[in-house]
Length: 289
Image 1: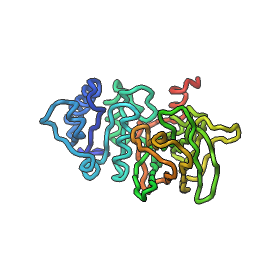
Image 2: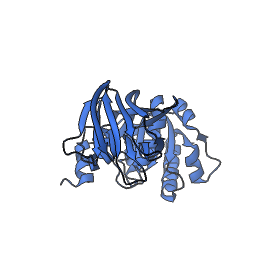
Image 3: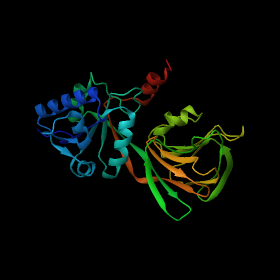
Image 4: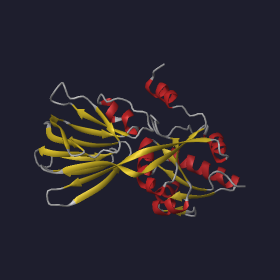
């Protein structure tokens, strides 16, 4: 039988017994339906079953038309960064805590998955950020972020000074603990905790949110998603500033280093159960009543 998705990747949080159990339940269910599926290499290590068919992220990108992520939001963030360029849709099973992105309960996953495979689902497309760091020695480093790029102090209890430009125009010179450049997806994460607004997740926009700015007048700023943001570290003690992508990728910064943030040319495709409602999610996760 032909389903909406016929070549499926199973990706799970590394070395987590609950995730292992869920992955195997999904595998058995897909076998019963006759759906081809592979395990992400590291997820197969979690399952500790070397006979399972495995694939690298690049092979998943080339061969699969759906990736099921089992874990928390962090697991989906990692998968989004590696698979977005291949345009593989992502479906999240929540084995973490908050679950803004992995929105299907393990208790209901087989029911929802059957419906999704039969074409009853909703798809969202969300932006992904590229962060290119230009170092003083002309070297560059490139990273990606689905939630946010954060330029921040590190270790020392002192502020850093940054210059922020949008499309080549100076916006501010700021002393603060750092800056958050967030996607609409990331607007409900660190940016929200720092006073930034929630953005509807499919908007093509970015927001700039200061972290403890040494001024009362610098407020969060929402800009067009096609803009180029440049943040230059203008004054910092050596080794005490970093750029961090999605809280998972860290790179040290020195005075004079510049981080250039843009929207990538590809989108992250998220699959939700039919009837998914973002505002219902906010009510549940943020206790809005």
